[in-house]
Length: 114
Image 1 (cartoon, helix red, strand yellow):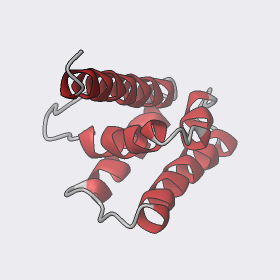
Image 2 (cartoon, rainbow, N blue to C red):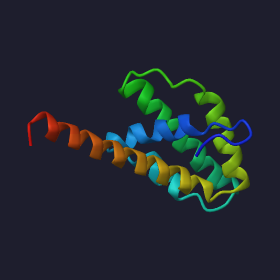
Image 3 (cartoon, helix red, strand yellow):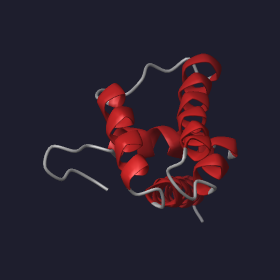
């Protein structure tokens, strides 16, 4: 997702993946519902990112990843121009979370000698 012409959207994907790993899917579900760039859907996108950031900062007590503020700004700008991108961000975050869960499961099995 990645860096194109100075874009770095990875901090947003990582932020959302943290939520999915904790089985907190609300913000991802909100992003997946963005259908066009009218104010209603843009509000949903902003609320989703706000909720994700709030969860990580308060519930997890984790500092935000470097570059998160710029990444959020860039993500919202892209969603405003291409609303379907919100669903893509949610999908990538969910896939990343699932991949990390699989890796953790494999590491546990290896640690148990299976």
